[in-house]
Length: 224
Image 1 (tube, rainbow, N blue to C red):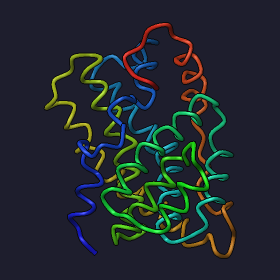
Image 2 (image 1 turned 135 degrees about the vertical axis):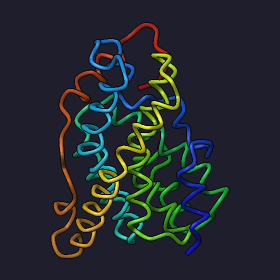
Image 3 (image 1 turned 120 degrees about the vertical axis):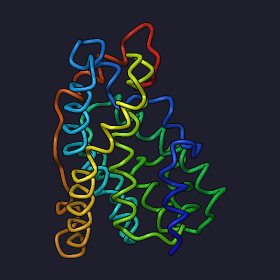
């Protein structure tokens, strides 16, 4: 196992397309719910323990070698917003391109063939981690980190926040990130006995609602 692979995968400069997405923070800024460092911190903590936990569980299960097509269907069931399902598959398709170049593997090729329009991004992330020789917990950690690092980066651009203060938000969530990754990894271990129902299905209804509203905006800086 190479720790360098985890650093590459979690690096915001990895060409996975995430820079074009705000993780819902653009809609939250537009609604006035996120307007400073404190409200950004609250938003990120809530996102991490809901959609971030779900993504981490799916990524961990994919990295552990469970059927990616069943996991992709489970991701659909956990994503009620059509706009977010479309975005997740678009991100999965972009990540697939980068992953196949960096860590070619038969499993990535098979998923790309089975889902030509893109599988959900956490599933691709998990298979990428597996191809890179990483563990299920590594995949969960990367997915959890991504669920908050994207919104923080977007908020800097949207609100003109001090990057040092914004980075401190991520640092302050370190214990939460470890907790979510561990919870997701434990859930993935139960999949052989319980099926995909063992994976987290935490909801974030406001993110789903605002994602649909955001998709209808005539002008927006981010795709989501």
